Image (cartoon, rainbow, N blue to C red; front, side, top):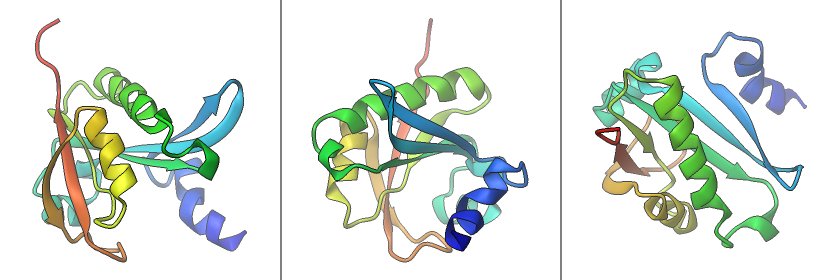
Length: 138
């Protein structure tokens, strides 16, 4: 329980501006999406070189729901929410672990382009930076 408080408490009580969203499928919670402005974390901006984007983290809690097409749909919904809530940013990004090929594929199926391997402070292993530019036009 202490780990949950450490990891999610600051977001829930407003000390961290990361937005936490519960993913529901047929009314049943199956995962969690976090969205956050990269500009809110100077270490991340320094590591990624992108300060005008919103990051997405996706966690599907039920392994039986992984690899069946849910991830790209959730990512697409989260991206639409980003365009609505953050009109000032030029894009969305994600940094799955270099070893998490399934997550990389989900972001790519949702239209993100893999750019480069990065080392982000506080993360245990290198990540593969993915980026999706904000759509232009109406």
